[in-house]
Image 1 (cartoon, rainbow, N blue to C red):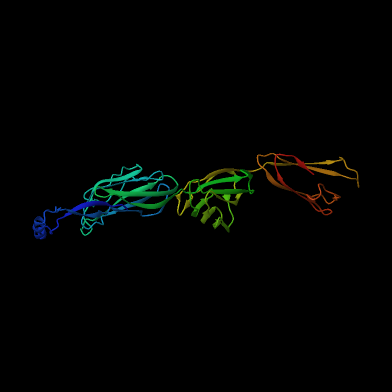
Image 2: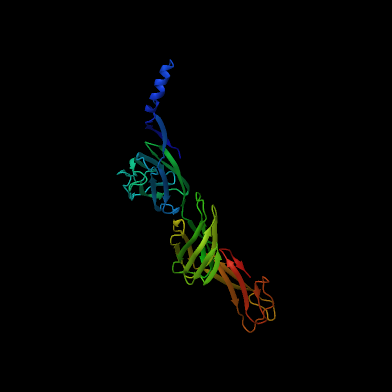
Length: 378
């Protein structure tokens, strides 16, 4: 803080006491010259004291908070006039709409704050002496966070009598919300088959803090189901409640990082489905986006053709049955086959080994597994 100085005149009262000495000096042949001086005392004028503080030091992107400016005159004998300041809010903040301006205590002067602009200013303010009722004023305006990041704010007030005063400083953090994406893999399944529904939550570039309290809910379309489960993911709790509910709460996503997890979904009914979540949110970043993904659940068309050779077969001779299983689509299907024989037929072997099993005259059971549109036979 600097101070300007003002001169004040003080008249000395010592001159007439010197008459006797002047007469005596005249008899001696000389007359002394006595200078009557005006003594000057220098008194300082202190500049206005400035303070600027937001109501909240962290706000979500596009969120609004109040920013207050307080100016005070500490001079006991001097009124301050021409009080002024300009606060550059950019690039993270702008004046809100509406601007919520309050306060006219600076000698009738008010803030200039145009909604959408990146500066706030005051001019022509007047403050009384420190002991007066109008020695300070407080003005406030609403500001909106328009870009994620840390805003370091510096502002100082000046007055005609003193020049600039102290620099007021504060830091405010604007936090962008999380972004959410989802994907089915595979995106085409057969009825009663399963797929992985993967969610990815991102802490956007520009954020200088972790996102906390990250949460969202998802209700699957009828025809898709999940089982009951609970797990810890991303520092939060993931809960699935059958048949259709998925819920994440209390998660944390670090700066410039992602949180990813998957849920097993079953295609219970054939059809084409689009799953859309509710908006993802965070405690400090506010409300983010919704996310959508599509999946097709279809019945597979399975055909089985059974042939035997030789025909006719000789009594006690070898008879080979060939079963040809085809998946005619459109989707992959998990296929099993069971074949029984008449009492007069006895199974000697079945191939391929490890897929088909049998016992004597009993049925042959083959677990063929997932089948696409490819011919398989045994």
